[in-house]
Amino acid sequence: MEPLTLREEQLQEAREAAADILQNKQPDEALIIFTEGLLPVRSVREMECLKQSEARQLRSLRDRIQTCRSLPSAAAAAGGENNDELSPSPHQPGSVRSAPF
Image (cartoon, rainbow, N blue to C red):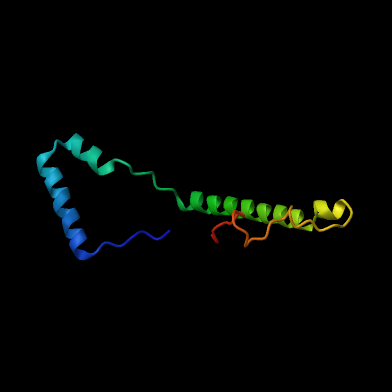
């Protein structure tokens, strides 16, 4: 994800706040304020491994979905009847929907 870009006035405000902290706080207090909530930066190698792992998981999930879609439905296995009550239309109220992401 791309980091947000600050406008010039936001940058100036941040500089002024940082200068105020440095002038009015003890060094150990300032360090805590500036580093609170920061996460360690991952190396390029770690990020590549993470991407590869996520790609493998995504492929595995896609394979499982394909397998499930290719299995005969319960209605077909029970004699070929198509029971609409067992598979609600995506347009019916209360049917499950998911976001497209």
